[in-house]
Length: 354
Picture 1 (cartoon, rainbow, N blue to C red):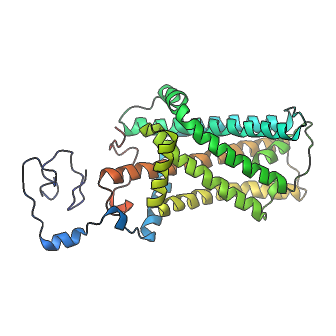
Picture 2: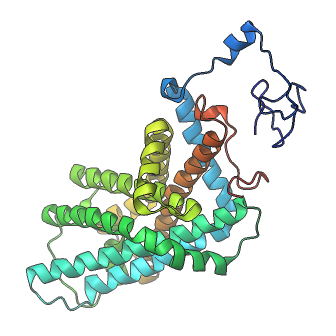
Picture 3: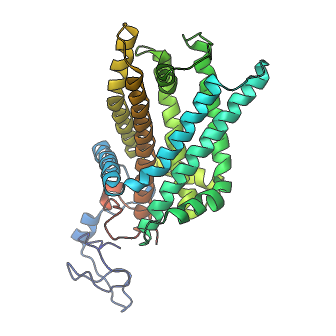
């Protein structure tokens, strides 16, 4: 709880602010609070519908969300373990289907198998992210991080509520994959003997090239869909909401904090682009005829895993922090813009989810 006069932290149930010593509006001592007219003007209390969030403030909030996500990773690397594991599953499934799976040769059956693969991947990623969200809930509840408890929650209570979200996401992802396949410049169907180089190209989806506007557009849409999904997951993990209620909660956050969300989207995109620059250079040199060893390409595959894992982590963590901030904003009356409430910190000993 925060003092409406000076903004200082106030213990719940306290009668006076410890900083300015003014009586709190919810005081149980029956004190009548008389606020002078000049102070009423300074408070400038608005209804939730009338609040206009300045763009500059929203950008600063988005930057805070992004930097906090990076800080949390260094303080608690365990957060990234479930997502790293999901990349191993993701990469293994992609390589198997690309080079070893015996497709029946029937057009519609092949499409069905591809969709099932995508559904499997969306469920895998969602479970990994739900585990990370369970870690956050443990921290924000004042508990110690317990890997076993996070796994139990993610694959039992959260899984059922998450499945409809994963189903919708898989359908949208499948449509994007079909659009990529219809316009891809890569025509080779060779499946025999994949080399480390072939696997690196497959996992990076490098056939698009740096100047493919359609590929870029599909990537941006795919990322937007993914981050909206990741904004839905906290409602499932933290508030035990069903898929429809969780979607409505995400809609509410997107509506009220659009600038913050788009800023987080842009910054995570920029981070992915920066991390992908070495890969772009390597693939360009390879296409120009520069030879690299198998060991080198193996290192490229590992680096791709790091880039993918960090990208998904940043997307989920930024949306999770935005969700936490929104919850804190609601608990304090949903007045003013998001910056009027101190941003949440996982290690500030303020337990929002307790």
